[in-house]
Amino acid sequence: MEKVLGIVVPYRDRESHLVKFIPHMTQFLKNINHKIVIVEQSDEKPFNRAKLMNVGYDFLKNECNYFCFHDVDLLPIEEANYDYVETPTHLARLLDYLGWRVHYEELFGGVTMFNNEDFEKVNGFSNEYWGWGGEDDDLRLRCVKEGLKVDKRMNKYKSLPHRPAGPHHDNYENNRNKMRDFRDTPDNNYHKEEGLNTLIYETVSVENKVDHTIVKVTL
Image 1 (cartoon, rainbow, N blue to C red):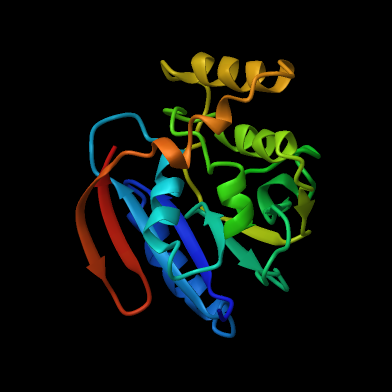
Image 2: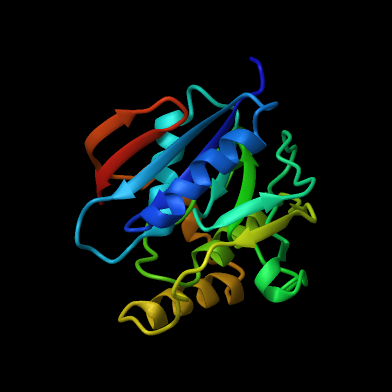
């Protein structure tokens, strides 16, 4: 099968970002065979970034053989590399608002790439992180627990202005405690029982546009 990249973007109420993201990525990836799916959460539940990523993978898994899980407010610049990966790889290493410094060495959020085999091996993201915090660290730990090498590319990104997410929501402590227990308990392998294999969602609509698809779902 020819290498086809699936770009999965979790989304809700960021239209000002989306209108910049789509043309930027379409031009940036003009030499890479790719498909972009915007997975929009259409219910009133707290935003679940990780579960929306699983939905996007589920939607494109038969059409693409490697995936980039991509926040809508990050735009690659200069020579960012989106070529096929042999191992889970973090792309968003250098951000403009952090002065092009690595925020912390184990960072695995923002823009992350997997081939299908590895994503299936870690059972995707957890579906249980509601609201901001912890889901990207959980994904990296899934890789570690499955013995996968975690790689990185020193790509640079411009961050579109937005109100910072933070720990001021009801689920934050639950998210952090869940991630820390997963990290600190050697025999905690809950990821084998929760992730892609427990994904449940309802598709509200599918809108095919020229250069991307918008899938609206309830979780």
